[in-house]
Length: 505
Image (tube, rainbow, N blue to C red; front, top):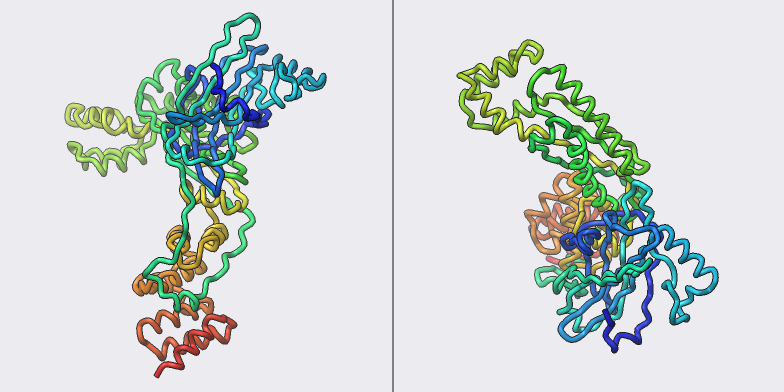
């Protein structure tokens, strides 16, 4: 496909990403492209000053390419009248990559050579002989123009036409007129008391070098066919791809190292207990081997177990149901051991009516896989924190919350909201609650200020803000006590507030 002539003067750059196997997510919904062989996710657009930042995650795990072939992927922005090509990505097969390197060594890969076979430098080498996730993060900045507010993002896939094959060009729309985030001008909200704003005492966050975090999830396996006959491969496949999505979500965060992945499968009680336990053991071993072979866990510890008959969940689900003879069913579950024929007695109760309900309504909900991904994350910069604030605020440290709040003008909506969210996510942190109480004072929201400050009223760090709270409530005596205590502890704003208090009759 011929490029538009007015764009031919632009020098195409190629983003270097050699076999990078990181996975990122979030942003706009994932899109399948290039005959379903390439998956694009994590689309993110942000206008920063006079630049437009475009970010996406490109997964080429399903790309079918021979060793001596290549594929060029070119994202571009386009509206009704204009088009801008973004830096291209070149994916080489293994033999094609070797030829690429030879061309570079011989100087034929120099971009100044018009008929050079390759671009400036390689992007990704596709090695189909390894079991791995072929995915990388694409991020670029280009000069922003107003027409981009109404543009859409496309991706052009150009085959090399190697070895006598016909070269085809495919195009896919990745995002139709995406919402481009514009820089926000933060101003002090009208309800802010500017005098109080200068007197509040904001505490620094405890230093956080590294966080130990985890996310957990549930993969329903209510399709009974996954547990029948020779269906283990289908079961493994189902669990793997759901786990992969969760792992990608974690790896999208910078400074992350996954340490452990715990996987627990649960089955419903159909048939002989001993046989079910053997099946559960085989499922756990097979699933663990499959997950290892796919490289899902990387260097992280991988723990896999399987519960043959999850009676605890069955009991909870029965209690919450309106099934016939519910209490009788619960009595049988609690009184009759599994080894003494619990399931048989349930199947015989009331001509099998309750048992039929169990097998059709309860047991499918029991069949599932639960997982916990444990990871460590180092503190990130302000821009990364802003992204996480929108997508995964629960992984931000208190230090990152406070740094992010400080990046906004004091008293602005963003400033206040970040401190308030920090207190809700860290309800047991004195620093988070005292600072949220301070923000509430600037809004004269005394009820919220009491909620955050009262539990820590005895702490010296809260003295200044407690004094301001009583000052706003008109309790001069308590205000003077707290402010004097804060002044004695070296809190500078307290001295100004105390001077103001004493100047009033």
